[in-house]
Image (cartoon, rainbow over all chains, first blue to last red; front, side):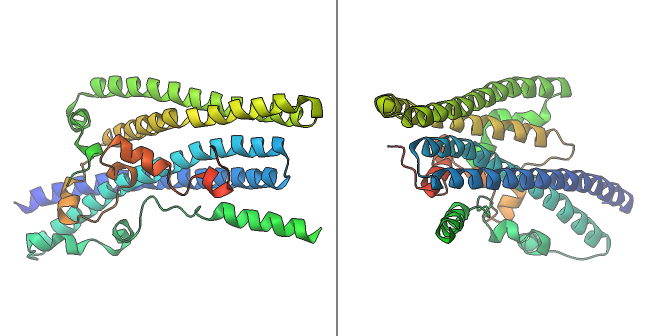
Length: 151
Length: 151
């Protein structure tokens, strides 16, 4: 491929990289909002349960129902972010490969996976569905119970 | 192996459609998404109303039977909400995937999955709708974490 064609291809992949980086960042902000919403609902549910009344338990159940939906929205958002990141990674790899081709670097096609940049290593090491909310409710319950003990 | 979600033929065909056809398909799915979201919101709102009813009945000894009945109805309403939540998740995933696929430069992650089999795509990694339901009902479920049994 001519250098001119490689330059044009690199330009296109850079544009796509920027587009997917912005979309991924925007999704990240949405995830933060959902995280906060879930934590607020969790706090309310635990406080209702701590009242120890039947009506309050029912309210905690209604809140847990909303938490289920927020948690589903959170899992969806994390999965969509993974898809956006895979596109970001793809275009970044293409930019690297084009630059290296222009510089005369030879790659073994079977080992291209090994050049995945470090910033994307968590796509492999971490589970997309593991949120930082696991155990949150247990912690909140202990907190509320200890407040009750202090009274 | 390409997960079931990414291999659905209508999703595979989507990037090749004209903008007009893409928008038409997105509008259709958006309509379903809105309807499901509305049902979810209504049920959460109804559950909160029912919880207040349980609370009111529970406070008067002579209304104890009414409180028990209200609680029973309330619990069955919550259980009945899970199928619509599962459908809502599938529709929302599909809608958001169409949005991502509409971005210029979108690539299915086939090449990345060929390079690395261990990239995690969260809910997109499921191999059937049943898998999706299973993930949503796993041990991180708010009801389980709050110690609430739905019976």
